[in-house]
Length: 150
Image 1 (cartoon, rainbow, N blue to C red):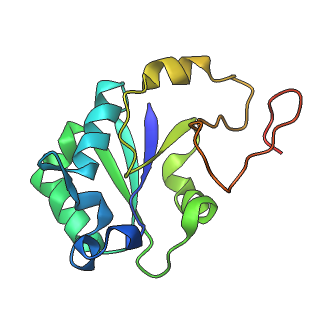
Image 2: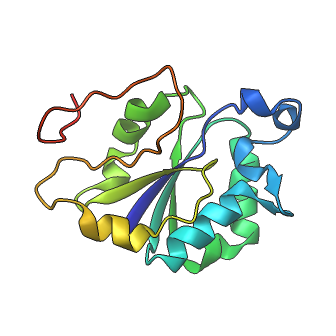
């Protein structure tokens, strides 16, 4: 299965840590965020992973090499010329992601979600399936009566 990890962000909310380190390599419990997400994806059956990079991209590449790409296929979607945000990041990585379905995972999300169960529940005819958590936010998602994102 294929997944894309968004790791290109500037990590501005984690400053001053991200003044010298990409957010993906900020340690949590002694291991980089990227380590935790890679392990979760691999444990869930993902073996082809695309990672977009921008901020301190070389450090992320070095880390992946030091981990032997965690024993899976890793492709880099290089955004060092321009940070493309969410939709642009996916579009930029399109050739690395097609033709099969793929999961998008942010590098700064650590959860106990059963990814295999989530993927199994996705509608096969859906263009995309979105998983969100219920939490206070000023940003709202609007769905129609068939639970399609509007």
